[in-house]
Structure formats: structure tokens, C-alpha cells
Image (cartoon, rainbow, N blue to C red; front, side, top):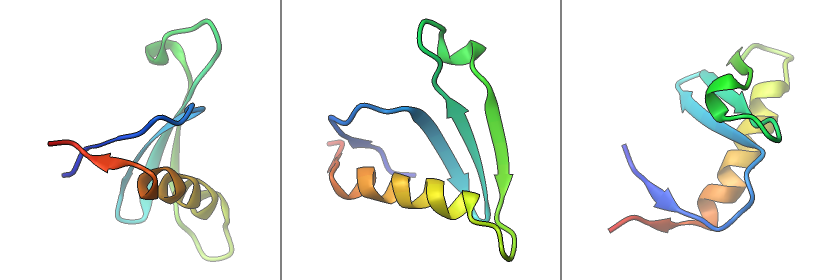
Length: 67
């Protein structure tokens, strides 16, 4: 596990492992615990996991390791 710091405005919290991910969609005015969570699995021909993974990678590449 690795933690990094970033300064981007997030619209989702993304948790991923292997070919699955949980996406906690942020809802304005509501705490994260009250917002929907999408459980996504990577499948052939599907693009949703790739879309979120690419978003994650863009933020990750701009972040700094937590010392």
C-alpha cells in the first residue's frame, strides 16, 4: 500500500484491486458515507473501469509520496 498527497479537486474516491474497483461518487452537500458507491469489474468490451483507472493514474502521476 502506498499513500500520496495531491492538490486536485476530487469528484470520486477510487479504491482498486486487481480487476475490480469501488468508486465512491461525491455528492455536493452530503458526507461521503451517504454517497453512492459503484462496485465495478473489468470485463471484455467494457470501458467504465478503464475510464476510472485512467482518471486515477492522472491524479497519481501528479501526486507526491507521503513521507
